[in-house]
Image (cartoon, rainbow, N blue to C red):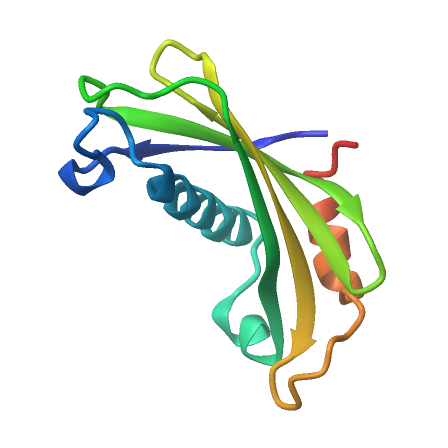
Length: 135
């Protein structure tokens, strides 16, 4: 299946005193990429008001620093696992040369926004995500 890809411009605030992208910026890259994926899947804001997609866990393996002379990163992401009420999103964060600098994963849980109860991943969401499924 297809991976979703997004290019994210780097900001001054993404860098730290060690002259490379700060570890906390990677979480923002992951979030920006997930939001882009939601738009790509055609899910609109009204559907997200009923079913929330909450981050239950994030994991990041930092493989190579991204130096201060970089202007952007590329994030490739895909759905790597489906559960009953959860799904995993996998990421590769690449520098401008295309080198994988970090690998990451988010465990996402679907929640009924009105009640706060964990619910099964809705069929329409599962169907939309299946285009981006890669085990």
